[in-house]
Amino acid sequence: MNSNRMLVPRTCRLVIGAGALLTAVCAAVAAPPASSTDRSAPAATPEQTYQRDRTACLSGATPQDRQSCLKEAGAALAAARRGRLDNGNDAQTRQANATERCRVHKDSDDRLACERMALGEGRTEGSVAEGAVVREMVTRSVKP
Image (cartoon, rainbow, N blue to C red; front, side, top):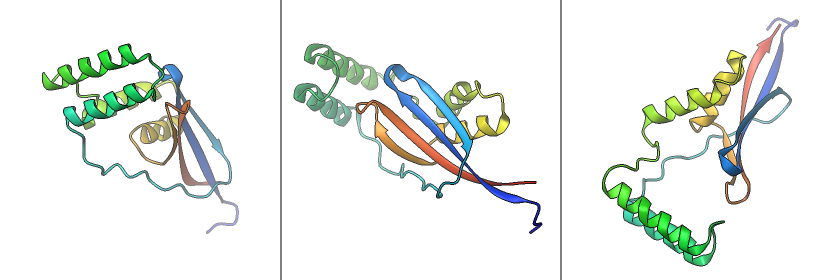
C-alpha cells in the first residue's frame, strides 16, 4: 500500500424522529465497523399486527389517546384486508422512498450512504417511541 494514502473510516448516521423528520449526517471519524441489522423476521399477518397494535393502545404504550389509537388500528386492519395497506414493504417502494429522502444530499457518497442506511444497512438503535431511530454505518475508503 502506498504510504501517501490513508484509510479513512466514514461514519454516517440516519436519524428518524418525531413527525417523521429524517436527517442523515456523515463525517470522517474513527469508529469501529457496524454490524448489519437482522431483517429476516417473518412478516406479521394483518390480524397479528392488529392484535399487537390493540394491545399497545390498551396498555397506553402509544402517544395517542386510547380511542384514537383503537380507531386507527381498526382502520389499518380494514385497509390491510382490502389490500390497500402495504406499508411500503416491497423492495421497489422502499428503493423509491430511499432515493427521494436522500436526494437532499448533494455529495454522491453521502447520498449513496443515506440510501443504503434507509434500505436497512448498518446498525440500528432506539425507536420512534423513544424519540428517535438512529442508524449508523461505517464504510472505509482510501484517501490520497
